[in-house]
Length: 124
Image (cartoon, rainbow, N blue to C red):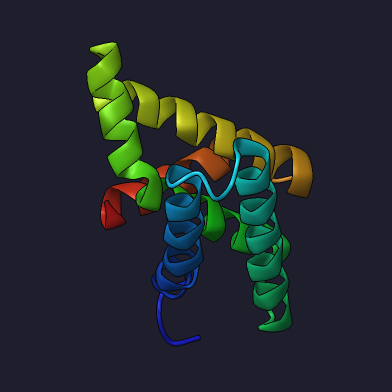
């Protein structure tokens, strides 16, 4: 791939995420349905990356980072509601994503966190 992986993933995830989110917000989907559809979409994207020859760990880092970039408006609103700096929630989200990558794909959590945080900082 000629583009950085996250630049490929952002538009591929944005369309379905926003479509599902709109359906959730208008009551067409409940929380469980939204979660199931979004997980299915993430699995679909991960499979696509695999078919493109991208390693599972690298693909997971890119997908998690893209999801966090796309989730930033919600994190900002949540931070404001909780009267916390955005960075606190962002750090938690990065840590949770890195732990998932570490547990699922065997990458060191610190390395995954650094990679995810770097991508989020660059593309936020």
